[in-house]
Structure formats: structure tokens, C-alpha cells
Image 1 (cartoon, rainbow, N blue to C red):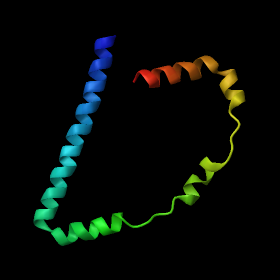
Image 2: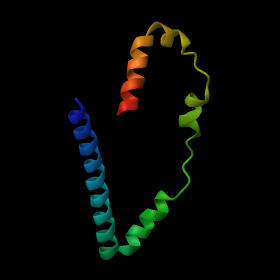
Image 3: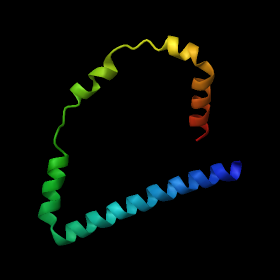
Image 4: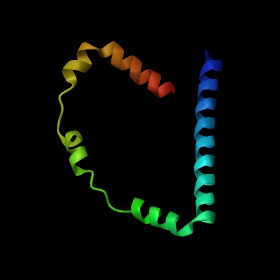
Length: 85
């Protein structure tokens, strides 16, 4: 069981590491081939995007006590599994 967990965390780490390397290589190649295009893309991504409409739902109060008390074992198990991962 512990070996499976270690292997899962190791694989997750490697996926993020390889993904970051690929993104870095693509960005570096883009800077070598077309630096002006990469700088324009950077300016575009640095613009302010308002997320107010998307987060309005998160700002509202939600009553979840009823669900939490009804399914307390499931919620506890999910929290435990998430904490272990």
C-alpha cells in the first residue's frame, strides 16, 4: 500500500516536471524564432481579466451542514484521502 502511494506521488511529480520542461523549451524556442510574437503573447496574457462574474457564486453563503451531517462518513473519508495524497 505504501509503495503504491509513493509510486503515485513520484509519477505525479514527474508529470509536472516533464510538463514544465516542455513549456520552458517551447517558450525558449519561441523567443529564438519570433521574440516579438512571444512578447505580444506575454502582453496579452498580462492583461487584467475580471473574474467577478465567475466568482459571484463562490461569494454567496451556502448551507452544507445538512449534507455534511447526512454523509459524514463519506466526507470524512474524502478529507482523509485528500490529506494523505
